Length: 587
Image (cartoon, rainbow, N blue to C red; front, top):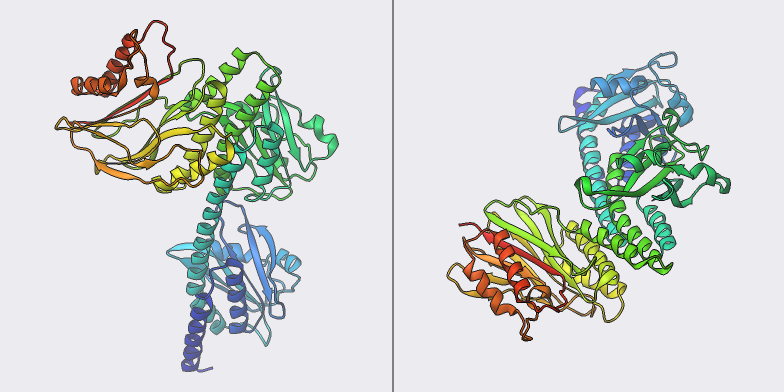
């Protein structure tokens, strides 16, 4: 073939490649089209491609023969044979007689059911990064030539770009599915207070996101210093004795002790593995942690998944399972608390457990916001209450501020607040707008709490760079805004209380905060305190205190109000929860 004819043919192939590759973003469909075009372009008997996965130490080969419709898929050791050489050195390779060539990985012949006589191998490079390798096998009419190699090199750039684009699309699609799954998990796990149902639901929902052959939820029994309350699937019935672990025993016990997740690519190489299944080759274990962060975290158990394949789990799946475990931990603890109530444990023990749960919901420290002074406080009326406040870091310069109050008292109120907090945090992580967060949380509470119960709340986002506070008031006590000129405004916009009506609609409103302006968020335990004469402390007294002490730091304003409320109360007054946030823009 003359150079001009070869050039014309290459141009036609490139145009055909552009048309073919740009009409799909589905990964398997694209790979099939790529291999079919390569086979046609160089007259090959077969072709295969693999994409580098930096989370694995092997490579996934997708092979297509010229007379077949469907791909053959198998794995080889990463770096083996000629394919590994091309991937390492980024250089193409043409071998016109491969029968006795030691560089050929004969496992390809076994797995792909093909005898290799000649081949052309070309690296796939995109944006300067090594993406993978493509190889044509056995010229159907003669042997491969340098012209065939040039054709593959010409196609390689388009193939690399197309594979990279479909991979990005697949990752974005997977991320969207995972977010949807986390939302479903939040709803499902919040809908049951029975421990067996919660444990069963955990493994069922996990199967939608992660492939595994056996799994189990292991909960710590502090009285016996072992992992008890086990719920498993995929194990033989006689494996129960192998799954009864002491704290620190096996990979699961190690995770329960350290609170750190583990991925084991090959359990035969980890002496900690307890062989409860002979088929298991890899394992991932994630701790179930109750709390927010820091030393206050409490490990309540571990989530274990096992696979019959080597290297079955990766870091992306680990992140998803950890997010899942965070929601599952709250649901498990709620279910455990409910069961303790049902079996008649002492009320003091029940309340202490509930208080410990609620304490982990509250911020450990006030956030440090550039240009702002902020302080929050919660003083429960008893051992446990229904008030809640939180600070949520969203992105740089944007911080969520939440305050809420549940109807009722004691453990039932704490359980509803746990459901409210879990659903709100889940929706915030989905990056929904404030009014959408309110809509979704309202619907979840409507479906999961008894009629007559409800939550009042204010959720807002402070943009500390642009000094914009955007809020939604869901039937809560009106936050007070003291302007720099001394005028008072109330943050009214939002909607009704949460959990009462599915038809409720919510709105949000942004306001600009000038230097020295103050916003006070509070619950009714601040204003509805009765004095000896039967008069309430009230909003007017609260406003006067804010005005009088506006030049003080946020925590001092908060302390002045707290002491004034206590001084106003009648000796026999039964205090409600006292919860308040003071937000002040610095001068």
